[in-house]
Image 1 (cartoon, rainbow, N blue to C red):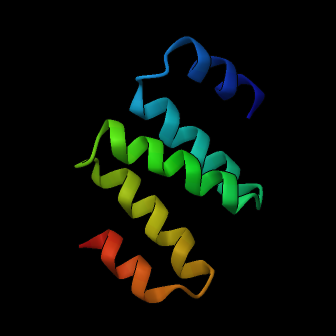
Image 2: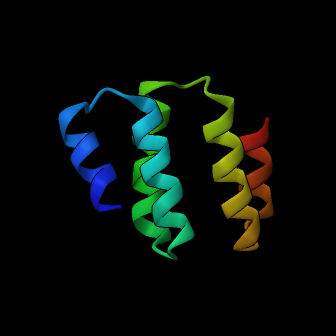
Length: 73
């Protein structure tokens, strides 16, 4: 996460870095921060299917199935 934070600071418009940071936070259990990073990712690259699929996976894992379905759509 620390390295991704540095990368995000150096390239704030890079959606792949934001997606990786979001995934790292979600994987570590910090879903609130992950959700904020996913929002940044969606703002930078709204049609990035990988980001929406990753986010849907974590939403489903938390039992938020309706929200997960919306991400997959």
